[in-house]
Length: 62
Image (cartoon, rainbow, N blue to C red):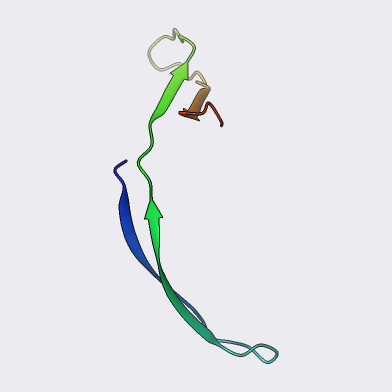
């Protein structure tokens, strides 16, 4: 994913207890590198198997 700035608008209509409010700001999404790893799975056509994947960022957090 490439770095990009996205405008964000937030609004709350309010209720019987809280007044409504509006806000806007920019959110910056930073570029990241990810890695997907999986153990090998062998299966036969038309037989369901589950595959467990792990997605980690460059700091190896999940």
